[in-house]
Amino acid sequence: MTVSKKNLMILLLFLVLTQFFGETKKNLVNYQILNERFLIARSQKHLVSVRSLIDEIEESIGSRSENDQLLNLRVLLAECYFEYGQLLLDGKEKERFFNTALHIVEDVFKDDLGNGRANYVAALASAALIDFVGVFQKLSLMNNFDVYIERALKNLQDDTYRGMAYMARGIRYMNPPWPFNDYKKAEESFREAEKYIPNYSGLYLYWAQLYLKLGNRKKGEELLRKVIEMGAHPLFEKQHEENVKTAKQILGVSK
Image (cartoon, rainbow, N blue to C red; front, side, top):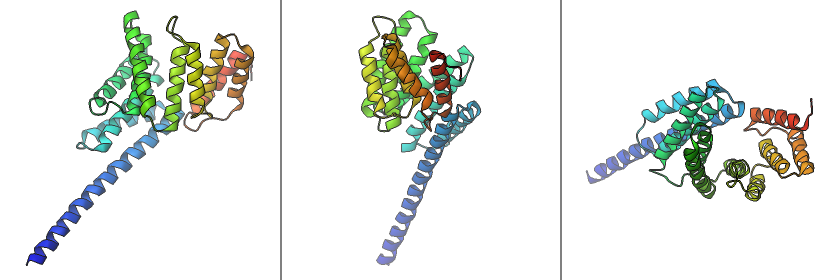
């Protein structure tokens, strides 16, 4: 009788663990599939696909209990909101989606302040919102960007995101008005970015523009030609087409 009870307990424990790990695996696969679809939609800049992902992720979040993948889904949702805002034309709508992205990751920080991807999204959303606010808010958002991007660089593990974060920091130091620009830091950031995304044309486009600002036309034009000649990064195919077009316009090349 004792053996039977013991075997029954073992069987029940096995069933519980099987269900638990089965659900965990299902959640993990669900997140991975959604993330892969997001990367494809972002690469193609496909507005309808990103909008569809927002709806699916929101539904997925609302239908599940707290687990490890829920936080990842919230971060992915925020990035979808940001990318969707990037694709919109209406300024008010763009601002609304950027704000939503920022609010989502700020809520994530309550559970995981050091989440690298969440900080990356927060930095981008803060930078994007600068175009929609007054002078004092611009300074606040710029300061927030600096905090978010440094936390992102400290915690990001993915090479592509790490490279994009360094590039974003380079752009930040290249573009703000004096005394907030720092061309030396911009160049240092681009050099760091190149270690992680040497095959992304957007990096060299901004780097070229930095050299042109510095009066180094030879180096700037060299990098612009590099943009035109290199292939597309698989995660940024549509953006590469736009980068090539911009590089040609700067160089005065018609074809």
